[in-house]
Amino acid sequence: MYDFTPLVQAIQNYLSAHFSPGVATAIEWTLVILIYLAFYAVLGLVLVYVERRICAFFQLRLGPNRVGWQGTFQTVADAIKLLLKEPVTVNKADKLLFNLAPFIISLAALMVLSVLPFARGLQAFDINIGLLFIIAISSIGVVGILLAGWSSNNKYALIGAMRSGAQIVSYELSVGLSLITMVLLTGTLQLSGIIESQANGWWIFKGHFPAIAAFFLYITASIAEINRGPFDLPEAESELTAGFHTEYSGLKFAFFFLAEFVNMFTVAAIAATVFFGGWMPFHIGDWEAFNRIMDFIPPIIWFFIKVAAIIFLMMWFKWTFPRLRIDQLLHLEWKYLMPLNLMNLILMAILVYLGWHF
Amino acid sequence: MEKIIFYILAVSILALSLLSVLSRRLLRSAVYLFGVLSAVAGFYFLIGYHFLGAVQLTVYAGGIVVLIIFSILLTHEIDHKMERPGWLRAGAAGALCLAGAAMVIQLLSANPWARVEAAERSDLDTLGVLLLTPGEGGYLLPFELISILLLAAIIGAVVIAKHHLGGSRENQENQPL
Image 1: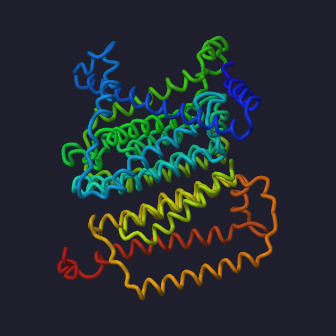
Image 2: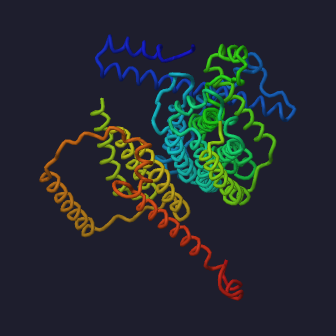
Image 3: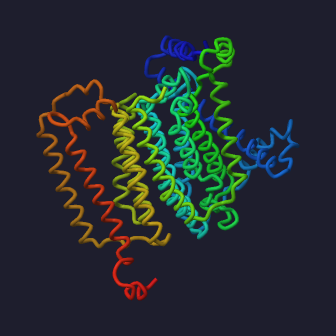
């Protein structure tokens, strides 16, 4: 019912009717880039506002509530403030790398965003190896963090970068393994294919215990991979001032901030896609009427509801648990999450081999 | 359109490889190398071989370069520069490079190039089936051999990293921290 393919097709037809093929492709690319950049910025603003309100809620405060209705324009005001601030460059920093680092991080965050399917036909890049592509790109973001920490020529920044290097490289394994566990069920890495395979039920229900275990392992590992609390050691305000982005100010700091929040959205969106059926509506067996009503809600709304629920879960974690120590963090990954993931993978392989899933 | 992207990638690979060799700051060299490897991944994506492109990004750009950067971070001062090589060494290296380039150009221009149509399905399914097919046309044996090699490498790394923990107790106590 809510299919975006005709709309995309119509734009394509219009452009190719009025322009030469090369120009039409260029215009399409520009459109996609503009839409994604706008989405990237708006997403950052919304998530910062939500984070501050939810944090305030957990700490029995009010949070920002003065600018606009319930403080909704607070982050817009913040963004304007950040734009007007002076971008301070450290005197003895490596200027080239110092300026390059925010771009590498933003690039990685933006590229991962491009493969996410928001609704049927609403996906910029439906690549055959979707999940592998996401893992590949997210392994690039760490380069930006390492560069930022080193080129600032600041001991806090350097320690933050070192921590994040150790942390991200270790936790990447768990993220990859828990997604591979689910790939055993889906039988494809293509994100649209993964969603199609959940038309008759989400994998978290169909996959029994291993799927639920994989979901929790994925959420834990990916919170650590995107440096969010309780695993936000690379930033750790109380010990490292601000970790790897201590020396950044103004717009460059905003880039880090934005990339962090967009990464949170991406992680939640991947979880929603792989475990909760992406934009597929919620159906219960043969309750015909109920299923029809659920079908009325557009897929894109479903997608954002699921993503919002998972983001809320991640914020809940952040404001509930205290921060870990770096050795505890690495122990958690190498001594608990990794072996559990491997066992879960074998369990899932047996389950799929015997055909016990639905 | 593809031609333009090809030339952008080619020029950036050439420029970045030169920069990574000529730069006198170690970390900048590593970053230029990162650029080169990512651009090579770009080539794979351009010819539609997505899997190899993603693997190139994960293993080279995200794995090896991160390892290099990490070790530079641990050992290097920020304002340390490599010393400028003497004229003799620069000249010798330049001559060697020119000789190598001449040889490669000679080989490339002498090679009879034939146009080959790309395989119809170079996707993951085919790759996975081929990797696990024993016998004719399959790669099961090399696949397993590489797994054993990697396992041996991991065990070797653990042994080397932990060797000071072995031996007698006295040895351990004398170990400087």
